[in-house]
Image 1 (tube, rainbow, N blue to C red):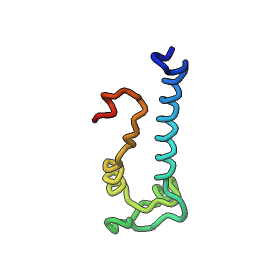
Image 2: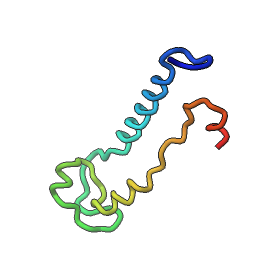
Image 3: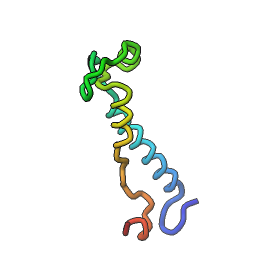
Image 4: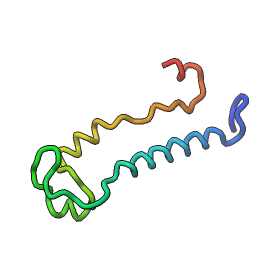
Length: 87
């Protein structure tokens, strides 16, 4: 049940779009191509098991963990309330 002028199911559509955007962004960050033998950031050797598990990997685990913490998430406002738009 949607409120106001929104049609029924509008809230679920917003949730579905948010999840879909997050999945698309995660897939875009997935490594592709041939794996590097050495980390492009620190130069340490990337273990063979990691290279086999993630084809196209370019960084060691420590450097990738730092990159993952620095990811900025989407700030698209799908709530539609004026209060959330003013932030």
